[in-house]
Amino acid sequence: MNKFILSLDQGTTSSRALLIDQNGKISGIVQKELTQIYPDNGWVEHNPNEILNSQIEVIDQVISENNIEISQIAAIGITNQRETAVVWDKDTGIPIYNAIVWQDIRTTDICEDLKNKNLDKEISNKTGLLIGPYFSATKISWILNNVKSAKERAKSGKLLFGTIDSWLIWNLTDKQTHATDFSNASRTMLYNINKLEWDSDILNELDIPKSMLPKVLNSSANFGNFNYKGHKIPIYGVLGDQQASLFGQKCFDETSTKNTYGTGCFMLMNTEEKIIKSKNGLLSTIAWGINGKICYALEGSIFIAGAGIQWLRDEMGIINSSEESEEHALKSSDKSNLFVVPAFNGLGAPHWDMYATGLIIGITRDTNKSDIIKATLDSIAYQTKDVMLSMEKDSQSKIKLLKVDGGASNNNYLMQFQSDILGIKIERPHNTEITALGAAYIAGLLCSFWDINHLKNLKYPNTNFNPKFNSDKINKLYQNWNNAVKRSMNWI
Ligand code: ADP
Image (cartoon, rainbow, N blue to C red):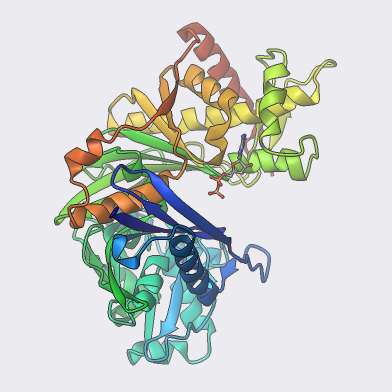
């Protein structure tokens, strides 16, 4: 009988369960949407019990729909939305507050306070991150300070913290395992990625008791058993979503790089044992830990990628679906001077200008909506080039191939333009569930479902895009983009 890895992909908008066979083929997939809770401006929460229940529902469904025996599941791999924080009661298992989602910026003031104490350098040296509300640390601090008697309960060892992987593992193992993996720990802003330990100074500064924190294990490790209908299914792998996609793309070698085109873009480069200190606003993070060996990565993010296409659809009303953007781009005439800079909430790496706003420049009497749509797609490719150049500078290496995934990577016009403007080949796998695949791979390594060489040799069909612009054309367009970006800066 065929064996499978059960991959659990707990994302920001949905929970998914996938069955993956030994050829890396997806044999079943079930998804359930998750309620987004917006209690206030800039606040985003999830109900932790809904996360757990939806994850169990999709497990039930994927097993029953595909008529497999539970004994055919060799192991579970988990990948999850990163940074989102849950605090729960150690005895009852009841969360004391909703999960505060990574996108939530309610703790901006706490972050400002840390910066005013000149802790930027120390925190970035220790954690690889730039102080920000996205990471778990200040979210935990907010919960402890705002939920009645939470601080005292935490200090007397009654509360536990976890990112979503820990929350799922603790529940699936009947409270036996309170653990996370290196990749998720490195997104909390509490973990020293050099010494591989929770950092006492940052914990003291934020008054977070160490007793709340999970044990940090290898990404490929025994996280305990999920007791499921009389069977024990071992949980053998855990990776944060972007690291899972790096692994799923098989970026196993130094300098191999992937970019995920979703609402925003996340580009990660494998830097092996090196922690690269960025001079260009990128982050250092842990990609994974296998057999005690840590692999690091450099990470750059773009806030507005697919979100720009959603803006065209929802606010501008000039397309009915994201997919429609492609046909408009193809019918737009070539206007090399029209640019959309989607700096809706300022500019990230490498410009870092909170005072920049969105801008459309180069409009003439014959500009039409297709041209604006094309320029918005182009902006995703230009921002990707901005981040890639920073990454090349920081790593002092040249990226020769970019592996891509995520919703907006399905746009062929965008991928061709991306290849043209970068001047390198783009490789897009036909299988779009790369993140779930990464979690399955890391789990399968532990139970000899695969070994690294087997994974390297798994061949998938890809679509390749090869560059067609000469360097003069690239330079001219990119210079125009940079000029447009300059004009969007320092506006408010
Ligand atoms: P996330 O994981 O961030 O929710 P997904 O990987 O599901 O993102 O991708 C969804 C995003 O991709 C949306 O912002 C959507 O507008 C964009 N998108 C999806 N398909 C296309 C397409 N064919 N062309 C351009 N953008 C697209």
